[in-house]
Length: 438
Ligand SMILES: Nc1nc2c(ncn2[C@@H]2O[C@H](COP(=O)(O)OP(=O)(O)O)[C@@H](O)[C@H]2O)c(=O)[nH]1
Ligand SMILES: [Mg+2]
Image (tube, rainbow, N blue to C red):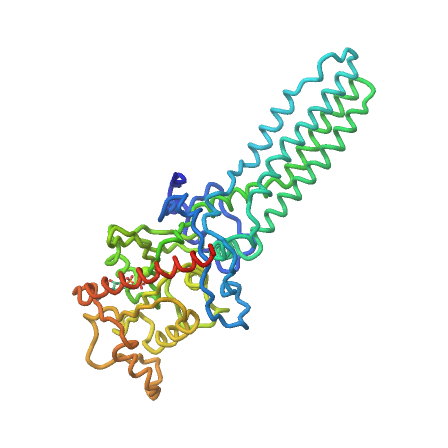
């Protein structure tokens, strides 16, 4: 069973609003009403995903980092797919409207002859019903939205990148606060009404109680809509199957990653939209010997410290940290991509150091543009005569395959090597899964 595709409505939202709404570190991010970000990309069936479990290999991650994206992967059996199981949240006005209607329909207990007693019985029952009709859905939401700490670390990172740190918990806390307030006001007025001595008093206390409960809900009911928007946003996130090998293309911006995803994919790759970026990220499949693998783009990495990295770079690091990916690292030494070879070399070394356990393949892209003498950017220090860098400028890392999407050079070899890599990655995933079962 696939969850229903949601309609991609991004074109209705000005891009400035998107950026404003989801910019880095946004707290209290308000998601516009009826806001669907993208066609849900299903890279696998829902069952496959929820069954899937993957415990990331323990990378030798720098202990002293306090960046939560690089936290040590946990050893517990978490799986992705939690966002697809989030409860459907009703708009607050609908909850209120329906609760008022249902409460008003409640009749007094049969057989009460005394008019005053009948009226106060009806009043207390209606107030109690209104309170419950409002509180029960709120409790269901609070209980069924997963605790962030129990989520797969990849999904946890997505929540933080999308909503800003703490927003998810804050909204859930407010919804629970609203529930408590409604219960307390409801109980107070139901009990007050039950103590009426005349019919008129009972009617007045009922009306006052209904008003007060409605007011107490109405004052804060916006948080329910905030929760509704959170659920919509998270449900629309791309889903990755953890039981299948995923090839992840990494490198600086414009080095040719997306072009290679197109070349490597069997069929047309889908565009995945993460809510914190308007840039689509490609995800495709590679079918080899009747086996289906995933291939995905990542947003480009720049040479800078983690503190300065934007959400797109953080997404790349979250994918590498938490998902069972093999890396196809793309180097552009042609001088065309906007990141100098020496900066690309620094980023490359950093990522290689950070993810030493990942299966890895290097490609030098745009081979058709490569000149005989290596490119040195004007901004670079030409006296920088690091031997390793010199070598990198000429031919990239040892063992890198030279490819060109334009002339097709090297693509045949690349595909063969990618298949080998994905098979190895599959063995790794199975080994991890077998070890967990022991
Ligand atoms: N000449 C040449 N241009 C390429 C090649 N591969 C990609 N490009 C171009 O490089 C630019 C960036 O490519 P893209 O795949 O979007 O890079 P990404 O940002 O790393 O995903 C685009 O204009 C591509 O057309 C190639 O093999 N040869
Ligand atoms: Mg791209």
